[in-house]
Length: 313
Image (cartoon, rainbow, N blue to C red; front, side, top):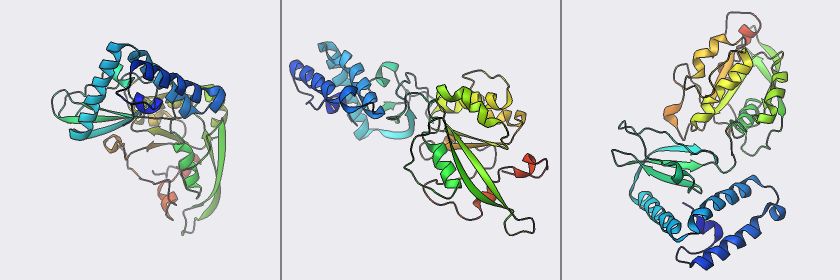
């Protein structure tokens, strides 16, 4: 668990002058004019600035030090029952413990988190671990955190973890053996359009929907906002207006879409209880090659796309 002191490279017992000097030295080292506009550095810079505004006063530093001691105690003695990821600009966390009560996560404490924080339940000894995503500031910027790209490449037979960021859209092409091993076997060329989720590309994204035979929506199961944001993409697909922050699952609206829709949840290892169970599920590790036959099981509703009633997920 990192703290403000770790970022500016100074001891917790340092004097006010030493802390001030360390902070401004840190600013000079990490200023975008010197290190470039690296997203991780900028987010760390922003986090340090927020905490500095608190610890630069005696009372604020005492409060922050008390919070740090509390965090270290929970880290060593607490029982972590849940883990979630949040984005840099999130200020509210609403999560419920298995006992039924809510985890106590004050908005002012969220701003103190550098990489992770631990928060207690209001009624029992269980804790919630909140992990701060270092490379995103808005879930609508990259809804899958390159998980869309990982999935597309895994389906195309080139699995991995280190892919460049998508700017606008990227195309992945792969051959698919439809009904392999049967008299109806056909080789089909599939184009997977990996559309970036940045707001600046939302309007342009509609261009790629024309002529599409299906859609794959990728969201982060560890982040409620990412799931809610799928309603926006469903609206772009079927034109049906939805409330911006509706808690209703988009699965209920699948039938209203003119093309088949496949819902893919990533980071299931962080929040397994949030994986969808209303429909049949298929678990795929995009780091490894998908086994032969899996693309037939994860069928892209080819029959329905071509007007046949035979299709399955």
